[in-house]
Structure formats: structure tokens, C-alpha cells
Image 1 (cartoon, rainbow over the protein chains, first blue to last red):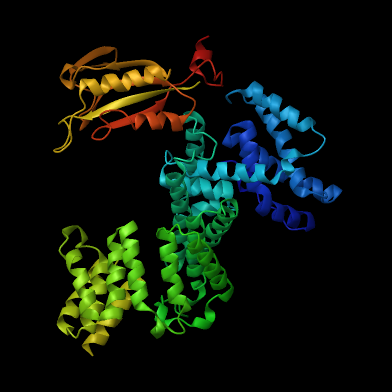
Image 2: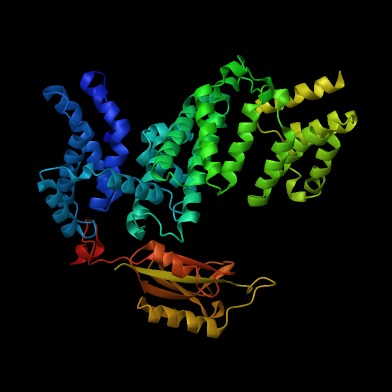
Length: 424
Length: 127
């Protein structure tokens, strides 16, 4: 990995502008340049060159009136230089001619907003192409579309910078060698490919949201990056209900981020959280997006999950939650995206709505499945339901099994506390 | 246009219970379809694993061993070479290979030395 890869603006006025332009425009400039040069690595290097040049030039000559256009033009010229030296790029002659033609134009035709949007969609779909391994899709999406450096991404995923650098180079090489096309998929492939993109964005969010105690500081950034990506997608694809749904879901979860941990770093369940710490702005935005998504009448798993999250935060207090409706939504979710995770959550909701016995009834088929014998949340949920049904010894056994299966120290401590409370 | 090789792997033990083995008519139809689309460069089917002989030269000595180079659960049964614009098209066609519902198709781009006269290129080094 080159030293330039880690470049970040330094202190100072010009540098502050560069920092802002870097965050706001880098992805757009990069997305268009990739289309022109046909090579991820070369385009990325040229854009890095342009930002490095901006720091020196803007400090000396002042900030240009249109910093984004300055970066675009400089990056293109650096790309021409690099392309002249790099003979391994396919269709090099044609690409050089096209770049020279663009450079000769008096006015920046790149000011065409819809063309820039199209390029950014191409970039998103290419970074999330299913021919790339999932960790590579995540890393590439963060690197090309987000504002994180390679070493920041490496820290967030607990690997060394050189490992992350290799993962990124390998992904870029695979795109070039196998000719993964730089385009938005055709209509018949679009639903599948879009759900792949949303899965990558939500995976990035969860990486930050589910971060354990010691990792929260470095990984929290992932939530913000995922929301930024979600907003970009929602702007680029305003008519897609699931795009709005995933953004609503992330906002409604993220709104509770500050309230999820107490002063001692212990995770708090929703009914123990201090609601005054919830971010009302995020909640309002999430609810608004969810409503817009639902009006499109194209339901999907992200909208259903967002609707469940909405019912949790909309209730006047934790005790006022509409468990019957939550249970119904889990049932609908289980139909479109069946998984034991959803079944366990549904049983918990039914347990609150119709009594612990009804919840336990729903767990019965899961308990008979040997593949789920080591699934910790199943035993934890069963313990809670048995306790509420008045079966103390049964609940204790289920708590012990859940504690045994718990990989996370915070979670284990919480289960031990509940087991203790049961015995006293 | 770039070329891709589809390497057709098939389970050593045949298709799992409930899956029909792809028959000759299906292979012929698939191959004809590629031909009609103008993307077929070449294709061959290989004799079974029992026919394989593996050759290595180590320390100047030729070693000849009966059998494939590695024991696997799936073996290479044949290949197609296609001339298509990009990976997405190659993957689409790979998903229609007659035995792909119980075997696997590996898609690999073919190196085009005429298009990549890059540093370290073996064709350049020997030229």
C-alpha cells in the first residue's frame, strides 16, 4: 500500500476546504473517472493525486470558485499522465483520445447532474458485484464510496492495514481481469443485484451497531458510513421501497445508539433505556421514510423490520408497545425471509401479546431441530418465557444452557444476573 | 472481445438422489445455442477420471502417476470457451450449463497477450 493511500488533509484553511470536498465529492469524481479510464486502480490513484495537489495549490493560490470542478479536471489530467505510462489498460488508445477530447472542452459537461448520478450507481453496483467475495464487497464499497482510508477500514474490521490493502487490490484486480462491467444491471437482473447492494450496506451498519464494548469507538463510524450510503442510494433510487426501507431501519436503530449502553458499558434492553437519550431527529426522519416506503405498496424485508423498529420507538413507554402488531409483522417477515432469528423474535412478541404459553408453543418446532441446539438466542428466549409462565426450574435450566452458549461477556453477565434473580 | 473458459465440474459420485443427470440431448442443445448466438470459440468433453494420468518433472526426473492431480469430490468433465463482452454475460451462460444444478461451473477469463503488453509479460520477455 502506498503512503498516498493514507493521505488526509492537514490543518489549515485550504486543508479544511480540501477535507470537505474530499468527503462530499470524492466518490462522484471517482465514479465518473472510472467510467472514462476503465480501471479502478488507475482512477483511484489519479483522484488521490488531485487531492494531494489541491492541498499545495489551494494554500498557495487560494481556493478555486468551484473546488469540485478543479478536482475533476486535475484528476482527469493526472489520469491522462498515468494512462500514457501504463500500457496494461485495455482500449488504452481510445480512452486517451476520449480523455483528451473531454479535457479540450471549454465547459465542464460533467456538471450534468444525472450523468454523475448514473456513474455513482455504476460504482455502487460494481463494488457490490456478486463475483467478489463478501468481505471484499464491504471493503471496496467503504473505500470507493465512503470517506474512510484503508487503515481506518482495516481497524474497523480488526485486520492489519496490509491485509486490508491486499483485499482491496485483489478485488480491483478481479474487476479488471474478469471484466466485471461498469454499469447498472439490466431490469431483469436489477431486483437481485439491488438486494445484494442493500445487504452490503446493512452489513456495514450492523458491523458498527453490534460492535462489542472495546471496539465501539472504531466501529461506530461504520454506522455513520452505512447511513451515508443509504442516503445516497435513497437519492439515486427514490422510487424503490426497499431502499427507503433499509435507510429507515438504520435510522430508527441508530437513533437509540447513545441509550444502548449504561455508564459501565453494559448493554441495556429497550425497556431499560433512557428515552431522553434517543435522537428524535433520526426517529422523525426514519418514520417519514418508512411511511413513504409503505405508500409505494411494494413490501419487503427491510420495510417490515423498519416497521417493527418503528413500533418499538413510537410507543409512549416500553410497557405500551403494541406486541400483537409486532408479532404480526414478524410473521409476515418470516414468510418473505424465513430464519430462526425471526421465529425466536416472533415467539417473544407473541409471548407478550398472548401470554408466555403461546410464545413457548411457537418455540417448540425450533427446539426439535438439532441444527438449532447450539443457537443461544433460542435458549435465552425460552428461559424468559418459562420464567414468565411460572416454571422456575425449567427457566433455570434454559438460562444455564444459554449462558453456556454465550460468546459475549456482556451478554453472559446479563443472563447470569437474570438467573440469580430467579433464584432469590 | 474477451474470452472466458467455462470449466464444467461434475460430482465424482454422480448427481445426488432426486437430481436427473444431464443427458446428451441437453448438452447438444446448450452447445447449439452458444453456436447460434455466435459466442462459441471452442468446447470439448473429457473422458472420465479413470483415464487421467498426471505428469511431473522433479529434479530432472519424469514422474508419471495414474490418476488426477488431486483427489476431489468434483472433477473437470469438459470446457467451453466463449467470446462475450463481459463477466455478467459469461455468468448468465454459465448458469445455463446442463449439469449446473448438481455440478459446478468455474468461469475464468482467458489471458489475451496481444492486448496486455505490460511489464513482466512473459510473451514480451521471450520476444
